[in-house]
Length: 172
Figure 1: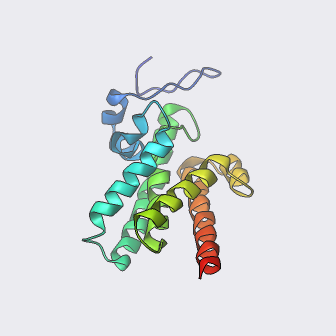
Figure 2: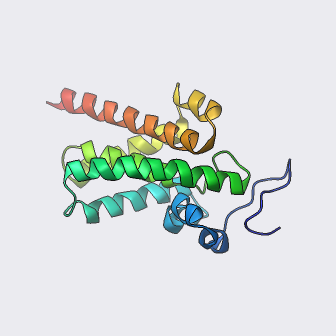
Figure 3: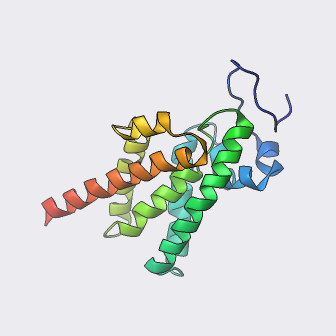
């Protein structure tokens, strides 16, 4: 099967490769510039990539600039993740990690403190992204296309920020 065609009905989704990544800009973005190609935990690897990018860019981007980046990255994700999901023949393939990247940038924008707080936020975010408690699981199952791919991770980010806010309040 060609790396840019969808799997046949009933067939297991194929694992995208470097050729698929380079085939279209939407693939390159949706697969997190290659971080989604990790054979183990692509969502975790994509989230770690997001953390690294945030740490590097934090010195150059003020919070208001990050807000602009997040809005644009979310809109870009709707397009890129939707096209890539269609090309893979799966609503939300595990290799699509742009949704984790953008959502974790949102979390990092609001996390108080240094790297230890960010590590805690990473663990909590991954928990919510993997477990998908209600209503995340509902929206993950019912919303389709690029918006659906992006939205459930946005909810996981909001759950994470809520936990961090409660923990910060209790620690004060």
